[in-house]
Length: 126
Image 1 (spheres, rainbow, N blue to C red):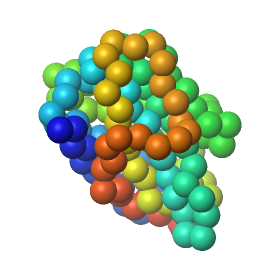
Image 2 (image 1 turned 60 degrees about the vertical axis):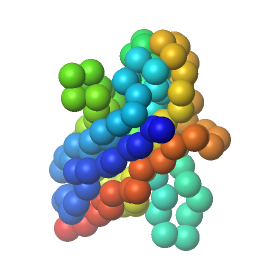
Image 3 (image 1 turned 90 degrees about the vertical axis):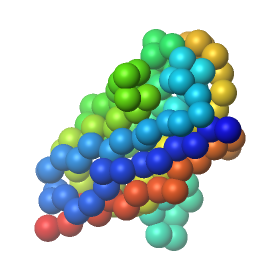
Image 4 (image 1 turned 45 degrees about the vertical axis):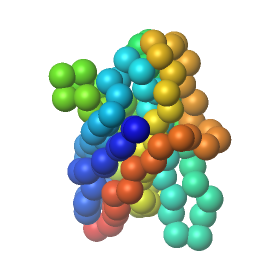
C-alpha cells in the first residue's frame, strides 16, 4: 500500500522560498509517478507539477513555471518541490499524490490519483 507524507510547509514572505517534501513508503520511486497539487480556500484543486517514475518527464503548470522545481532523491524515496519567488497567490494547502506506473516516462497534473498525502499549508504573506 502506497503512503505519502508531505512536510516543509510554512510561512514565507513574497519573493521568498520554501521546499516541500513528499516521502513515499510502500513503493520505490521507480514504480511511482508523483504529482503536486494545491487548493486554496474557496478554489478548486489545481495541478502544480509532476515527475514520472523514471524521472525523465517533469511538468509544471503555467502559474508556477520558472519558479518551482520538482526533483527526487531515490535514497530517501522522497520527491521535492522547490518553490522560489513565492507570491501571495501561491498560498494554499499543497498535496502530493502518487500512482503506480512502473518506470514510465509519463506524468500528469490533472485527474485523480490512487494515493494522497495529508497536505501541508503554505502561506505567503508579508
